[in-house]
Amino acid sequence: MKIKPLGDRILVEQLKAEDRTSGGIIIPDTAKEKPQEARVVAVGTGKIVDGKKIPLDVKKDDVVLFSKYGGDDIKYNGKEYKILKEEDILAIIEN
Image 1 (cartoon, rainbow, N blue to C red):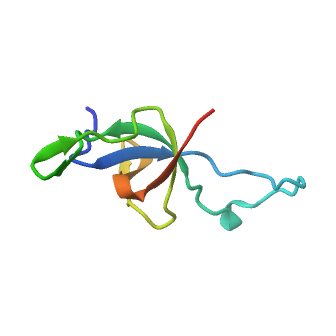
Image 2 (cartoon, helix red, strand yellow; image 1 turned 30 degrees about the vertical axis):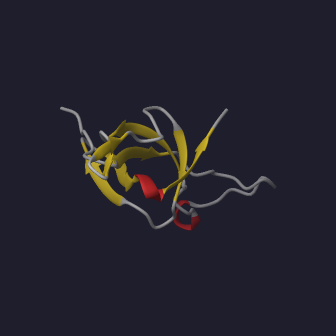
């Protein structure tokens, strides 16, 4: 079974938070902030503007930066995901 987002929604899996600071200090789990970077798992078909379907700018396997308070958290098959609208995506991180 797979999750297929509808419309302009995007399913992402958040990347792991850093365990250490740049100075080498270990950060305990209780003090870690949730990361704002995620890997795109699935995308919807696009949004409709003036009766025309506009495809989304992101695609599967892109690494994106998203709004801190955007989206909805879900659990599926023991994994945590986030469903975002396209407007919650701030940038695509290119390697």
